[in-house]
Image (tube, rainbow, N blue to C red; front, side, top):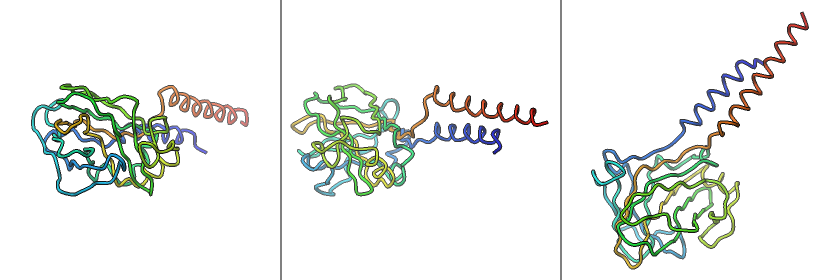
Length: 228
């Protein structure tokens, strides 16, 4: 085994992990995002296809442009991700989904915040508190790993497992972010700076991995010297 090559490969892999992210910044257009509504009790089933709802706004985002979505009815409203966020996103298992969220109405509704669907699995994220803030942009970061906030099948479903995340993100066909913050219907919500990021080893972990390889290389080098 050439440990120097192993070390180089490890550095390259860590570099790729750090770069592996899908993003939407809405600098010039809607980038394929759309809005839809779903029955609250089902948490993932669109009730009609009368849209797409929402439109790109060139100003007012955080900063620059953003996707603007007026609430069209009395169902749950979601931002729906375009194709570049779907498909094989298995590298995001253990990573994060982050986004900037805006609403112009008072916050009195806290339904599902994120819905992931794929591989025959539906995962619903319901945090303890609604992250939106009236008339302000707020950055939301959602860990894509099992926690008390992630449920299987619906907002009231059982706990999601690591295997469920592997299944859903390995063949993702729906990624929805909630635009619902107020009842009755009257709010306008905004979405900006969406990022689906892969899991990256903690700096301390990465350093230990590299030190381990370096130590092995040193041992191997000393063995060669002794052998001579």
